[in-house]
Image (cartoon, rainbow, N blue to C red; front, side):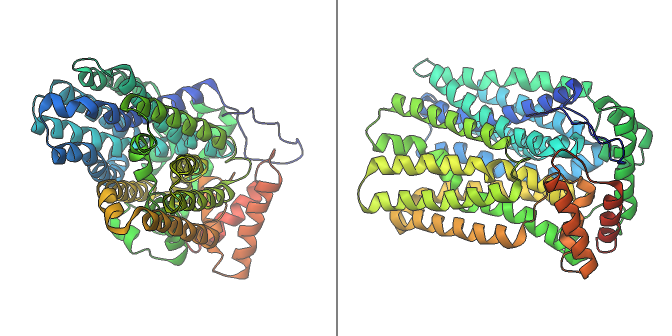
Length: 503
């Protein structure tokens, strides 16, 4: 995940680089734990619902609502996270998500009726939505540029590890009387612990600087790296804030009605990746893997084992992919992911036409692997990188809202769509959407690997003058062609100045 930063040449002035210090690992680990708790709360229901319905006497509709409401609540939680994170800070926001996890887990553990169960699931969903936005933002804003892709991607790895732990809890307590209560109770301990431990790390330096607290920002950066790194990084942050042509409190109007074309392109790139990550039906695969396994002849218990195995493979793919984002880049991995999804959805569609159930399993595994190679983690990486500093929290909230709403719609309507369209046409439609995603990425998403967050805006000025086009191209080429060096301050200044004229 982290590599030591190579020494810079003595004859070249550079933005100092740091390695993956122990304190940086500690900060990222705490942020990752928040994502693990979020994933656990999403995955644990798969095993719990096998006995939950019978124990509480739930109807089929009530069970569906309990399963699906977490995504709708997460969408609401995500959309308010930006305002909370901007007003109170990233640490307060992560603390809030864990308090909601704690309350939700408690209510689910003691639930004796449908109403209490729903309230608990809503609290859990709100916590999930807040954590899915706050944790990646916090990680991105404290991470050095050359490590940011891998570190932010770990948020998604952690979320999927949490989902896997949820599957494991379901398997461990399968057949235990009232076992679903133990599954939910387990989530209380890490949530309560993290709500306390997050205060052992500094607030985001970028948030502190945007609040005019430069001394606190410098102190936080010194704890992350060294004095030289801290001073250079703070200067870069200050320049970004000073060059923001609409300095002040970000508003939702700026998100929905951008003031200029570069900002519109930045928002379109980040929100478009978020849209396509769920529009192609990947959430349906996550929820309906057990059904696919049962269709090929497995028992309920065997289906849980197989589901856990598939979840494990997904986590391994994520770990593998997270090491490539800062080597191959974001854009190539997204294109590979979209191509793999299109092909795998096509395989599943074909399997229904020729009645080969085992081919469905191959296709489903391909979908999970392809999703893990790009879209799954890069929703967070691309979003935190391309959204402008002032708009980042609110834009990430909107991206989370889009993904969770689409996830909820797909998961709730999947069976009806399958019955109405037929499985062949439905899965083929998902394949077509994945092809559309490839086209969108090719034309709308630039490469951001290795760039400082404050310098990404230069890539979106390509529609401007020829000088701006040259600036953006030079900035990116110097980063990608010199993987063991950093962007010279002169290039950064030139790019930032060009971007400031348009953003």
